[in-house]
Length: 334
Image (tube, rainbow, N blue to C red; front, side, top):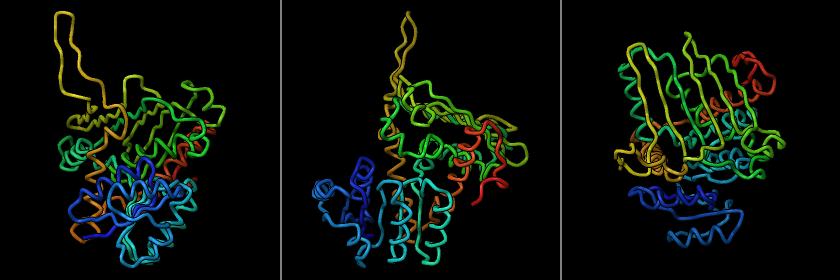
């Protein structure tokens, strides 16, 4: 039974707490948060203790920590936890600064503890099935990957100002997906962005709508479409064209009922947001972490993969800012 300390009691921390408690091989023993009352409330709800982050990391009885704190704390906490002998699952991104993320890898690796980055979309059953089908050669050589990721509504501008921008905050999930599916990092990145959803996002120096083209070795390509607004719900789709066919992962809908009458046909909208859409993925992600820490399988999404996704995000941000294609290996130092 793994004894777990949860760092961060906000929205995503609450999701993780439920999955830690529900898993038969993990026990939530402590929760911390910068707001002590939030930690006490979540801990009490799950029979754990509210403690400081420093106490959790220093406690030798705690086997692993799940880091669900603000992004600017991720690297420091990963380094402290691995130095204390703990396994780590950390929410994305590793850091908003690529050099700091690379330094984090260098400081964590010598301790030999498992570190996993929380790119939960890899664990969605539909996306995982698409990846498996491709790996098994069902569409032959992969040639053109298309990823659609639209949020139902933009975040507050106060969040945008500290998020690192749409490429590091939102599209980074899709960059990880593209690298994971193809099994490599792209050679060239071209991105464009605009602020047509909320002018205040543009005034804050960010985009709310973006398209990124990734060029992989051998002429393989990926196109990623991001928007902060889809009035009909949380739009998450993948199409993958190969030499011998097409793989498609459709949206997950609110229900499977379709109404067909003389007036036409209607069906449910996509799930409203990521908490509903990826609920199962978060459960599988946690199980994969537990199994990996216990030596029952490879630990998915290692820290290096988190850095690779950030490399692509850096390239996309540079491309959109300067209006040109970026050569990843030559211009983005990791």
